[in-house]
Image (cartoon, rainbow, N blue to C red):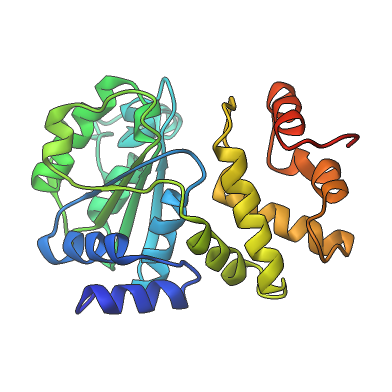
Length: 279
């Protein structure tokens, strides 16, 4: 997929994702070694966007499995088209086999395994799924194959590039982690966040992007229920442009703080700590 970490950085930048050395190296090694990449970090730091950018940068299709509590094999791997099977039974008097490809409904994991084109499989927010889902992933990540009792073992036609993301709301199993390379993405330094804002909102002035990045860094230093994400910093930049503001003065901060802080207690704390009034 890539010739070097430097090329990864260049291609990700062309795909709209501002990388750094650690990210570029991890993405390159995952491709070179054929290993899944587990990306962990706070919500909103660009983990999902990284997988999307890798797909764009490599010309691959993106297949996404969004994890949630209660996700099961039927939604993650495959299920049978029971309605179609029932209609076939009713329409024929023969003992026709109704457990064939014709009646199989592919879900993201099986679809990625059977894809014959370059594919990035994104298993998003893995930590939100039940522990049982990790069992499904273990066979997939170990041998890139899945077993369907009625059809047998299905091996990958072409191994997908796998990215798993986690917000670390629960600890993933050691068995799952052993199969992956690991990358932690934290909140960026103000200088890098400024560059991200400039890349995502190219019409904003550099000095205003700098003000935004440093103000958000200050907010993250407070004891908040939820620190502002990078995506919310970008939203704040777009908000200022929409309002025609060219400076992040006290009145502007007070009036637009709700773009980056989504809890009343966080809003009150920020107003107090920043010495703001009104808003």
